[in-house]
Image 1: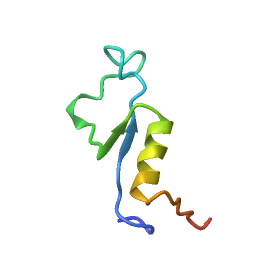
Image 2: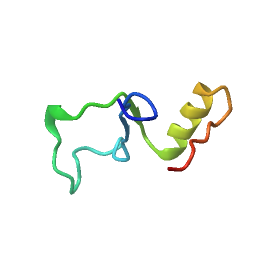
Image 3: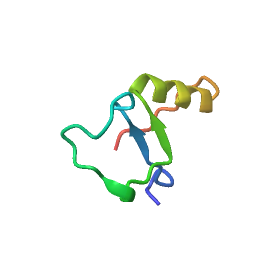
Image 4: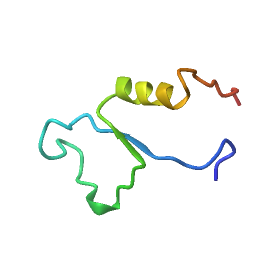
Length: 61
């Protein structure tokens, strides 16, 4: 567990409309994600919906 909570893994899957992995090596079955998004805008929209439209700002270290 990190200092701000449990580790959650999100993936921005930009190649969702394309086959293969492009220049990136195939990660195989080892890639674990809790959330998968097709872009940053989709991730922000999901985050805002989860927060009831609010965005919680974390303190800087």
